[in-house]
Image (cartoon, rainbow, N blue to C red; front, side, top):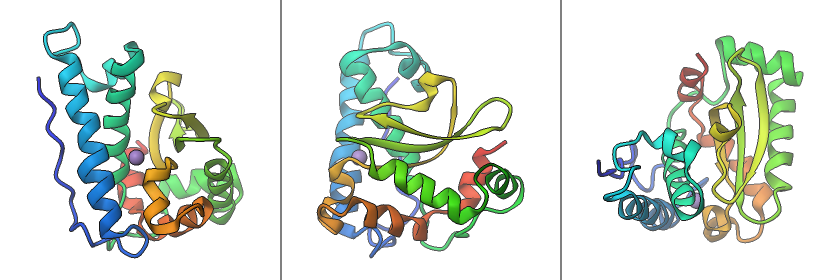
Length: 192
Ligand code: MN
């Protein structure tokens, strides 16, 4: 199997100013593409060639894990945004967020704090377990909650390449702005 980088469901300038066209062109066009190209090169003619991407992430290590997980993480990340989605969770997910974190604002603050305090490169996640309980977790580098038995719902990329063009060193400002482009219909659809 050869992985194809999925087309973005929005124009490269559609998320500006929260994420600029230049960032999309580099982050999606060069970084994400490189992870997928590397993944394809690394699985070719190996036992991983016909394995599902999630199973590669759960079983591989080293360069294959890094590129497989970064491919998954970036596709997931870019498919959480939209220029015109709903900007607050509703329904079951909203109820679970309110119950577990006190309010949507308190959830956002906890998520921003977790993202801002990751040392170096990584990802901050909202995930659920099999019982629907929510978790905010941090992963370093290419890490993914799938390896911890959790099901990801939402992630912010805190590698410098995700925000440095638009926000320079102000990672927390980036995290605060990205709420404006999250499509909670997409996040809620993952909470089943
Ligand atoms: Mn990235």
